[in-house]
Length: 145
Image (tube, rainbow, N blue to C red):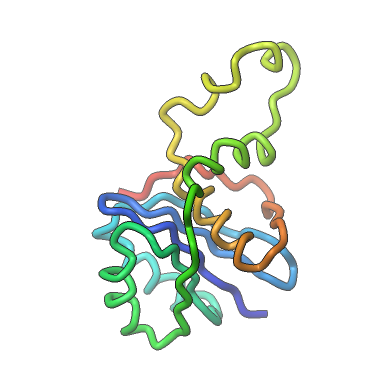
């Protein structure tokens, strides 16, 4: 089984997910400082069988693609318009509100959350034209320093 990496590029931070397309599962999701992205991808490639990298065509994507070409893995750029906005809605699909929290304004549950990994998931889902599920307890709020 080969896996894919999806990246939501950014100037200071990038969202990244590692997923298996045939299983429709996400195995890793992280927000990483842009300066550490190349090393993080290198570590993933060393430990996983990666078939391709899908990267959003937005901010700094060209610079990141140039850095990732050294891995000799197929890189696909894909439209990422409105993924950050859509990530808020997808967050609640992945982590539904229940109980009394349901009656509170939803926005308070995503304040100070890094949604870049969910944006990377949306890029992947748009590219594959299907929804993915999470493998066990993935924390999309992780920040790699």
